[in-house]
Amino acid sequence: MKFWKKYSSKELSQKINQAIKSNVNFSTDVSLGYPASKLDGNVFYDNAPFLKDAPLLKAFVANPNHIGCHTIGESERAFKGTHELEREALNVLAVDIFNCETNAYDGYIATGGTEANIQALWVYRNYFVNNFNASFDEIAIVSSEDTHYSIPKGSNLLGIKNLSIPVDFETRLIDRDVLKNAIEKAKNSGKKYFIVVSNMGTTMFGSIDDPNLFAEVLSEQKVEFKIHIDGAFGGFIYPFNKERQAIDFSNPHISSITIDAHKMLQAPYGTGVFLSRKELIHNVLTKEAQYVNGMDLTLCGSRSGANALAVWMILFSYGPHRWFEKINILLMRTKWLCEQLDLLGIEYYHHPKMNIVTMKSTKISKNIEEKFDLVPETHDGNNKWYKIVIMDHVEINHLEDLLDCIKKSWTEEPEFQ
Image (tube, rainbow, N blue to C red):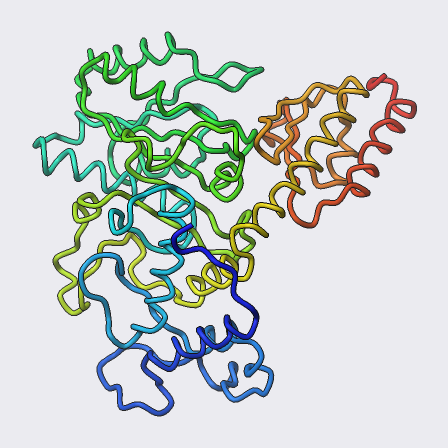
């Protein structure tokens, strides 16, 4: 690990306080040009005694703006202190977790995985336009049918077609011939440039796509392509398995990665991450943002510096070893659940390196779904799957209660016998 280490509570507090001091202080500094201030004092009292021992809340009240991308060029000097901590967090994510070379990436703490995914689509659409004079009609997105809804949303926003590739019902994998036929059909209809979204943990199943399958098929078809990894869910769990496929920047086919910090990392909602190789993000430079120092290369523009500090603080409060231990505890609980489902004869899908178990709905009653807040694949009355996510708050006793209720329901409800 080049950048990731564990800090004590005192060290975390000292570094955040120093970062805030390096920012503009709207209470004491003469700062006349910014359309911003600290949070409203009628509601957010910035001299509350408890803030002394709550550095992240102190940063929230200070209200740093992290507009722009701080891994490239200049940034707003008024928030230079907290910008630096965002860069430290990005170094951990890009270099230590996803195996990028130091200073060979760009990225930022986004408002969530949806924004980060659409940012990637935007970057690659413009990349093909700028480098190959491509028209929008010649560009297509390729993703599995299990892909997150942010991809069809981005397709609609950006005016480029989305090719949704079917997966096997049991394995949730894409068949090579099915993918090949879809690409050939798209080529015959005029598509020349392809943006691949390969999943590192789908929302419903936790299934993992093989980015090399996409790369091989598209290379055989002799078309231009870029591969984006949607690791919104799996990005903070899959890389910590020793026996895993290298779905990171060590794979030359992979150009960008999304992670969602408000899922496994348990940061506040509205916290995602976008990472890409150098020489890509400039394709979405908004030249009209002349008043912003360094201008803007992000989809959201202004964004909360406090959320970026939350990512930094969580990462450095754990360090790599404690995080590895945490993830493996969750995987052990997941494995235990799978073993119990096997004993009960309940069919399910589970990727062995993820903490999602998705049960077939045939033996699960509606009452069980509602009592335990199981998530159905669809709410349209034709549901075939229920999802369980083994998050930090889900313990073995909770899973035991679920299993006991399932067994009891079989004796009370004949249709489940």
